[in-house]
Image 1 (cartoon, rainbow, N blue to C red):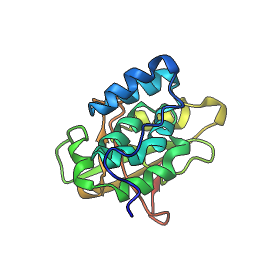
Image 2: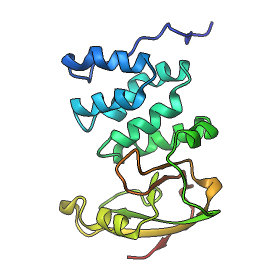
Image 3: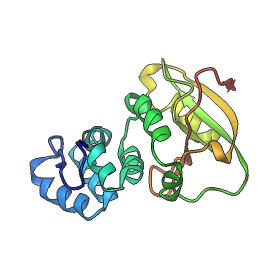
Length: 189
C-alpha cells in the first residue's frame, strides 16, 4: 500500500515560529512556495532547507517538489550542510520542472563557471556562479574566520546545469550542478 496519498500528509511546521504557522500553511496549500519559504526564513535564515527536508514528501505529492527545493535553496543563507542533500534531490527530481522553475538562462550552449570555497568546503559543490567576482567573495570575504579560500573554474554544457537562480534569489548568478567527485576542476587561485 502506498503510504503517500494525495492529502494524507500534513505539513510539518515545527521550525516555523508559531505566530507564522497559519500564514505558512495557507501559502503552502495555495502552492505559493516562495512565500512559504520566505516565512521559514523569517523564522531563521538557516531554516528553509530544514523545513523543506521535513516536508519534501508533502510537496512531492502535490507536484511542487522541484519548485519547493529551488525556493528553499534560494532562501537558505548557508547551504554548505545541505549540499549532499541537494545533489541527491537534484538528480532525483524532474529535470524539466527544475528548469521550468529556474530563472532565465543566459544565452549560450556552455558556461564557464566559478566556485569559491573556504576551509574544507567542497570544490565539487552544487552552487557555481558565472561571476568571478562572486566566487572571489566566497573564497575570501564570505567567512573570513575560515582563512583564505580557493577559486575553481569549469566549463560545462548548458545540459549539465540543473537550475539557475539569480533574479529570484541572492543575485549571485548561481548555477546548480551535480558533479562527480573525480571531475577535474581548474584551480585558479
